[in-house]
Image (cartoon, rainbow, N blue to C red):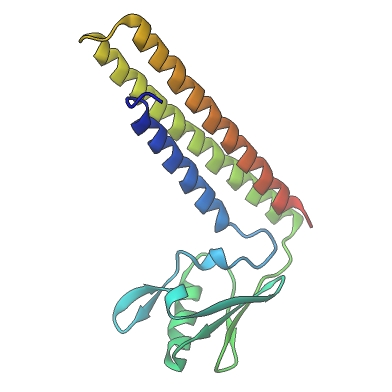
Length: 183
């Protein structure tokens, strides 16, 4: 691959990875420990990811269990969960915190699918913006020692990379939508 295309391909890969990671935090009726990825707990004055202060398990399809390594952290973990946008009230027995995910209603599933599609569209816009930046940069090269044919080839190759990522995003949107709508 032409080294002049590489920075644009890397940016597109990052946009795709961002979308993919974003989708992991959307719950689809099943307990998915990734919904806790963005949560931070106050651990001796430091905002620490919840995964670093306890053991997170999924004992059943709709339950996440958090077993803090220090008993004193239960209140802090509960506070972090309550302040988040997960929408689930934690319960604890003094040792373990449980998050019970209710069955999603049909309306909520449809809302989530809309959200998934919107995020997919935003990612495609980001990909197209990267393509535009690349094409602008290639046009600037035309003013120097690069031939028009070479510029045309670079633009075509960048379009192929763009098409590949747009197709992958469509596939990801389709898979996530299907996962959410599956009861």
